[in-house]
Length: 417
Image (cartoon, rainbow, N blue to C red):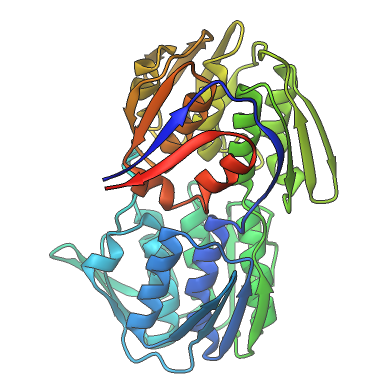
């Protein structure tokens, strides 16, 4: 079992680079199946989820290599159309391979995906959209069996702007005849990044980042070179850590617009935040002030993935803050672990009332990816020593997490038993 040992109370100062976005690189890796050519991806983070996606591509017949932060995928040969259970269970995002495999091979077999236990994330929206495009889908013994001999574009109206369903529909639509319109599409920056990649590959796609996306049937055919956008959730996590520790930290290679709602919350709590180009600098007060109500919403609202790190910062602030989680029903699982560190958190359904106080070190366990990051943020701000366990969650979404924090002056070390 791997864990972090964190000695709290250190002020964070310095500069930290932001890696490529996990939530962008995973659908783009899946999209490399479509063009049957050479795909060069720069700014590709070395994460557990990324390694799992590469294993899936290699299982399907692709040739994949990495040099530094550049991953090259040659999808000329795809001689399998199934993804085995042991690969699917590694990450929830593995379901994103359903659409590209179906579009490339005309059939696909996947087991139900794994990932963090943060509440129901049903793939019904994915399957319903693909059925409307002409796929025949059966569920058998925990597997999803899909076949499609004549995919045809049509209007797909999503009942909720699901990122995954938007991506799967978009990727499948590149193999459809006619025109597909995705209505009530997710607007996250990662959707725009996927659209940019598909356009480079030859697909005719418009509307990424808006609520309606149009895809004209045109299977991508060109080789692609693409740079993954910065990870807005990693950027938000480091901003929350700096705020909780009363530090001054500069993020490089970040996109300020993508973390605007998080920055506003931290400004309201007394932080000074400046941005220029892809640089963000945060100067925190000695102790944070109270925050306004934080309500998670689909982009451009406050991101559910940033709720946990911001809650950890709020645990150290003066006054109280109200968190309302509208996306996932189990997204407060980290609260019980924060309480072990002395946090004053009162939960009622999907609402959490946080009253700030001094935290103390404790032995805690990561409940999920973002909850694990929140525990590290709290441990950095606490008095005394903490032990943060179950790092497999954190490894899924943060590249060189401890090393980056050490460069900012944190006292943190990793132990791999």
